[in-house]
Image (cartoon, rainbow, N blue to C red):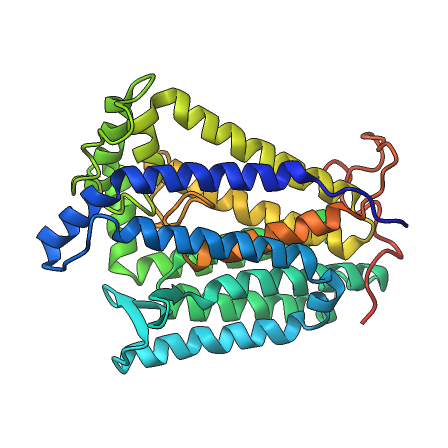
Length: 398
């Protein structure tokens, strides 16, 4: 199979979303800095958040290019090692955080990232965990399908171990239920599309539900979010909806946001979609959703046309990764689902989340350059309509 042109539309959608993010952070960064200074006594300059975001976006664009250039097979070869390295880093963050070591950033008792003083940015190892799980799980599902072992212990033991480690280190220790749900959705989608027998999903879903309920009931802030969502008494959601209502059809205009002046929590990160709604109104939010829809559709198409099963499943994982973030973030801001405190890909104030998502998308773009260019019969060969119909003999050998 010869290389052909990669899907540039995927890169274009990512760059458009990053450009929108840059404009919004520039417009409200000064207001957020003033609100933070007044609330915490810090001394952020009006351009502090904007310049940090410029650096983060530059690093994310570089990550996208690296993801495109570094060979998929090379990364997949060390996927299992990457997973355990990421898991070790997640454990280290928790331990160092409880020891009050200055190199770890903690917020309300949740320690989730290392602080790198040289560049003044954080590194959240859970993002490395996501991409390592996407790589290793895609190989595991595909290889076990080839050998007819998707219902055996040789598949379920390592697969369940990955999720169990994630639930413990990320969900319980780091108190990050949002990322745990994202990883669970990635693994669920890869197993489903990869052809894992349906009879096993009832048991798996039951285990997921039990673990999820345990994580919610053992964390006070999660119970508060859930009860606040059920009763409609939630300060964050109320101010988010005020943002959308104030924006109306066309928005209040760039630089005229009021909610970013300390009324709407996390204006630059979790709540940036609400600020877009206030600034550019219904039209602006609709265009953002369209950009995400195009991006996700193109990733799904690359998955359908990938030249091997493991690459296809990796694209499925990236699709599940991004759409989980989009649904949980926007759904939470609209009050449709309980808030998870999760970023909106390529729009939220930059950091590790944006960089690793960009790296993963870069890998998808690389895969798109080696896809099958023949027409696909939607009735017989789509992995999304016919689970697992094209995997036999297509996986990477260990």
